[in-house]
Image: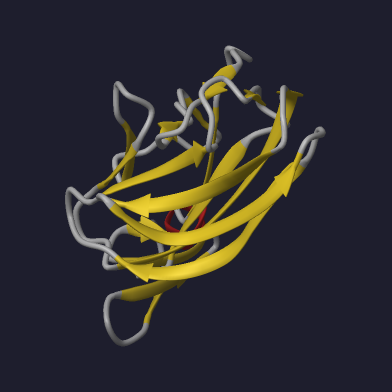
Length: 167
């Protein structure tokens, strides 16, 4: 770090920037935002129960938000509050149906939107702050009233979930 100015609470200022507890401020802020997508572009069929939209890619991989084998996101240590939002599009619609896009924390819905139509449409869930703890599972799930009534478009630009670590 070379010559630096020390402030209270282990904050330092030098020619490379601001350091807090031996970590550059930029590193701390960069870990806050994570957008999860499905890079394979596979279509996910919608049934009459909740179907997980499986994520396999993060634009900012780290140990704070961990993609699980089933495509859900596990909360790492030292996180107590997040802001989560999501977007999803249907590529194939077979019939009129009530469809819901929901964000779950463990097995509880924390944010949801729904629509009843028989044509292509997109869903957006506005950001919502929720309290979390280590090992909580965050997932994006979709449901329809009939089996195979629609298919979700996946891929990096179409269906995604964004999590911001607040504290």
